[in-house]
Image 1 (cartoon, rainbow, N blue to C red):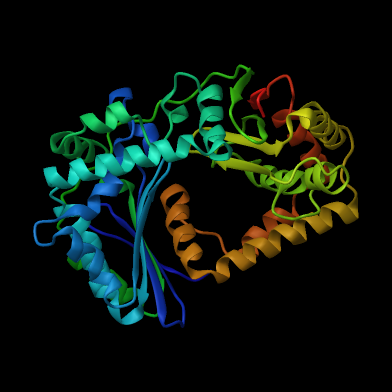
Image 2: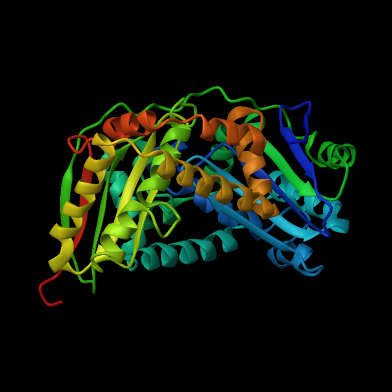
Amino acid sequence: MEYFSALLSNGIRLVHQYVDSPVAHCGVIINTGSRDETSQEQGMAHFIEHTFFKGTLKRKSFHILSRLEDVGGELNAYTTKEETVIHASFLTEYYQRTIELFSDILINSTFPDHELKKEKDVIIDEINSYNDSPSELIFDEFEELIFEGHPIGRNILGTPENVKSFTRDNIHLFMAQKYNTDQMVICSVGKITGKRFFQLADRYFSHLPVNYRNFFRSKFTGNTARIKSVEKDTFQAHCIIGGLAYDVLHPQRIGLVLLNSVLGGQSGNSRLNMALREKNGIAYNLETSYSAYSDTGTITIYFGTDKDNMEKAISLIKREIKILQNKMLGVIQISKTKKQLLGQLAMSQENHEDLMLTLGKSFLTYNKMDGLDVIYKKINAITPSQIRDIANEILDFDKLSVLIYKQSDKN
């Protein structure tokens, strides 16, 4: 993969890929998320991401939102456990407008008191809405279960009590400590040269003072399997089975990505989709996911079903895992799975917004991005015995936790 990369004098990294398209995508990815908060700060990273758009030294909230929308662009942001991301899609001719806006938001936000008050109400409504969605809430509660007592287990939105307490001073202190210039990547995919991209980024971001990171994230070291059942007033029972997995630098990470694809990935012919949905008709919503963090990871199997089918569904999942642990994939099976994964990766790069975010995240973690040819070689090098060994290590039921949302008796 050919891309342009550079380093600003303050440590901010740049990465850009030229594509011949009238639409461009650009973002700023900061290596700071909810796991970097103290217990009193829980929800702060997400709160800041919301309030970035509420006013700067030269723009009011309306003018920030209109700056790109008036020319057909889109401005957005999100927060994860380890990242804060501001990104935009726009016509190529508005690159300068976009990068200047990013700079204004990140450097000159004023966080007006009246806007903070309004946004607190919005976020508390978001928290309440999330609590009404068991199929989403269960993922947060599961991470709280397996990462008990550790910052990475806390939910991203925070608590209403914390959100109500946040002040402008709290925001400025958090940003000064955690928004470090050597932990920022400005990423871009669009129809301009690397030289022009550098000129724009340098013009609008090089004056940000050097602020290198001087702290380390606390590593999670616990690994106790837990089983928890909670009664919920829902029309369906929900369940997550899972546990700890490899971090983003682990040499077996790609093997686990392949195993996840075999077990319950995006393809309709995955093992669990065939066992639970196609053959037995007991689960409509079913997914497995592997999330890799900087120093740990999670593997989860989620499904929703009628409460009377819960035990049968768990039994079928255990059976499929046992097969993967005891029997190596055949030549045809593993070849098909690799082709499926390679196809999904190739198609994701056709989405230039996804490509831009992938570029940025890859540089944030690895300071490079492998091309599809390199990724293909790594995937094709994985053997059936590796898949079996990973299944035995990661999917050992003695190490997996289970969280169930049971239907209340009135349902």
